[in-house]
Amino acid sequence: MSDSNPILDVQDISIRFGGVAALTDVSFSVKRNEIFSLIGPNGAGKTSLLNCISGRYKPQQGKVVFKGEPLLLRSINDRAHIGIGRTFQNLAIFSHMTVIDNILVGLHHKLKNNFLTGMAYWVGGAQKEEAEARLKVEDIIDFLEIQHVRNEPAGSLSYGLRKRVELARAIAIDPELMLLDEPMAGMNLEEKEDMARYVIELNEQYGITVVMIEHDMGVVVDISDRVAVLDFGKKIAEGLPEEVMQDERVKTAYLGVDDDDGMEEVA
Amino acid sequence: MGHVPNPRPAGDFRTSYIGDNALFKTRFEGKAALGIVLALVIAAPFLSNYVLSQLIVISIYSIAALGLNILVGVTGQISLGHGAFFGFGAFASAWIVNSFGIPALIAIPLAGLLTTAVGMIFGVPAARIKGLYLAIATLASQFILEDFFARAEWFSGGVYGALAERPTFFGFIFDTDLSYFYLVLFWVVASIVAVTNLLRSRDGRALVAVRDHYLSAEIMGVNLTKYRILSFGISSFFAGLAGALFAHYLEFVSVEGFTILLSIQFLAMIIIGGLGSVYGTILGAIFVLLLPQVMEGAATSAAGLFPALETGKAYIKEMSVGAAIILFLIFEPEGLIHRWRVIRASWKLFPFAR
View 1 (cartoon, each protein chain N blue to C red):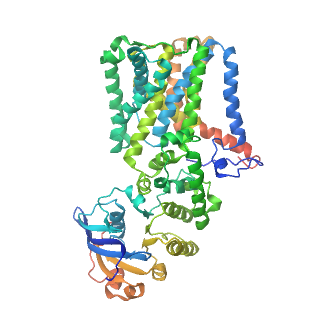
View 2 (tube, rainbow over the protein chains, first blue to last red; view 1 turned 90 degrees about the horizontal axis):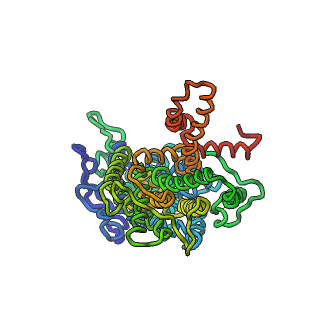
View 3 (spheres, rainbow over the protein chains, first blue to last red; view 1 turned 30 degrees about the horizontal axis):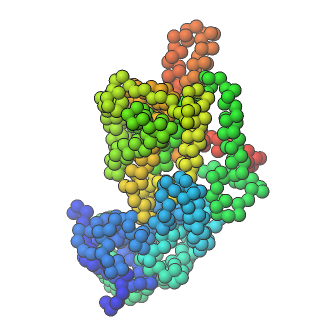
């Protein structure tokens, strides 16, 4: 491809769990300011791929380059510092914390105070920093329209709102690259439309590059700049959404062929 | 955890983020806390020695339980060695005073710092293991430290124990229960404020995040290993501080006092009081320390009516704490503080609350 400045470059990633090849030589690159979707049937390895990028899995071979630097040797908690945020497929919010506190955890790597100045609170600057952090949090709360639940424990919210809190927390990291794992799963039409709007605004207003796994093809076609399709751990197509949808291999992967055996769940 | 609403009363407005994040959620709570502390300060000279000694012991145990609550309630780890850390603080303070001639007032927080270091060493396994396995690993710290107390004569005086003199301050000796109570009250208030502040700032949130969902905490940039071990460190600091205060109160430290039973007693306090709650810890300490005495009193009066109970008085006293833990786990697993929150909410929301 002709991109001169890919923000994320995944090169020949392979990972096996025992005898199952979850990913085999998967390569793609994501340009700055793009919405890039990963699609594929269940167990195709989409989440495994995201886990490789976010550090949960260590691929047995291949490279991931983020902003020109190798990513795989960095620790997971380092990724927030260098500008990678992510949400999870299954809700991963801090259910006993309030919405505000959940989002404040996203600011963790930007805050300077430690446990000692935190305990001293009034003298070490923690109070001032907390108030400034809160201002940022309120901006995100306004953006995602969750003002009415800001003081509720996140675990007591509805599913759609929890997904939104999770997104809010990831935005608080202030990432350059956002990995979204099925942001619209389990939502009704209205919630999906809201979420799609947030993803587009994230991309356009905040300038965040988005890599998204999503099963709703309507959403994928509508908001993605480019799409890659995985099937059984291999990339079978990549390109503009409309082109990919017409691809014969993609149709086969989704609809299946007669002698299709063993669709094993891997991710 | 069930969420209990705690709306601010009408008229109690917060117009800044600093105000919204204040130490007390409502103005009434702030006044009430100040009132309780002032009442204790003013009433202390008029209290009997028995009541004062109870208050001192409750305060000291509260500090240690507060530390354990940071580890268990806030960070979601477990320690069966908290009693040994408490003991380490006691011996360390006596050792610092006796060997280096450092004034006891300074030795007490220093002992806390030494215990922090020891706690962090024993907390290292927490970086790798969780749950029951961590419980067994910390059980090892309990036995290792107990054995250390008995053998390291240079440090603890071995089986003979160590003397720990009462602290002095420019010639003033904290030799009465009254003066010592003020000293302990200072430390308990300071500990409560410090822990409350911790919980509303960056690192405290990180600890809770590690408890609630460590995978996503890590994605948010929280270094899991650092915070798990830090949690052991902070928790041990309060254990050591409390142990040192205990040592200088009794003026003598002996090996027998810091067995696993003490560790379990601390766990009982935070379970009964409320995991993760600062004020729940205090309630739990009060409950666990007073319940056996109340039960003994009740058994004594019952024995007047039923002489057959006379021989069983000791059993009733001992069993009551165990029974309380079981009953709390079944009927109020979120502790006394949750019960209080429910009562508070029903007052505030009256007549719309159950």
